[in-house]
Length: 411
Ligand SMILES: N=CN[C@@H](CCC(=O)O)C(=O)O
Ligand SMILES: [Zn+2]
Image (tube, rainbow, N blue to C red):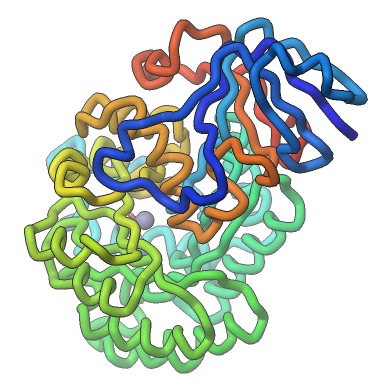
């Protein structure tokens, strides 16, 4: 099936295969074509170009966009979309003055979600998660990373990862799974982190690898959670199973986790609300992608990742939603890019690059996703009629999407 989209007002993010990720000043350039056509063959972008060449293209059906814009679907490289129930009571507790850390130290936070998840049957967990996935796909997300980490027992972690596997099989969004057994020390191992790390490394990790349930490994490297030494131990063990790392680091404190993650060739370091010059130096000339999560900063009122400082220092940056019940109960990537522009002083070009090209790299998908490139996956957004692409983050809180196309099909 060949579908030809004609009269595209602007075709955004056109690249060739040589672009893996964008750093520093490169992030401020968004290559685009005005008055364009694009040809989708089955699930793949087959061709695109100026409208005046469209007549020569044969197709089974032709769709006239009447000036609407087209761009690659968003890529959300950091989520915890599989979870049970919500945490609106903690939201109210924070309004009444408690901090995220205070709530966690009283047994709330991640442990609260873990208790709910352990009690939830797999089918119920799948149904709850499926609704969230359908919602973010309708909001333009075409590829998404989903973590475990609310199980915290071997059985419950595997249950989460099996739900992710079912979502992979049932939906056209590209899904990557990350094993985050080291998300918090569960009550059963309270005060004995080493004992729990042994369970994560010696029991969970081999079982996850055996069932091929994860593409990546993660750990919450933070005071009160896991240390840099725990992270190094886990990353060394994961290499044996060929699992690259994407780590939670520097959310509340600088722990030395960034240079350690870079040393272990982590694919990404995520959060970075707090960052120092040593971290920036470590990331410079590394292959590790820094990932900012502005909705987490917004929702729990913590600093925003200093995007300007990082990009101006020549670093790349990706943006993701962190969709989870505690710190970001939204997976809306349109809101992510708006918040990045409004609160982190990223330009619309930088934000769009961070949520497409750089985000694809942060999921290991740079060869197939994240740009309008011949041969890449036809995961596309058709916007409503908008005056310019800058209108997307400007019109914050609204979703200017007319149609989402995943694997070449309108969803
Ligand atoms: N900080 C660690 N993990 C999640 C939050 C988990 C939760 O509060 O449930 C995050 O990325 O923000
Ligand atoms: Zn997270």
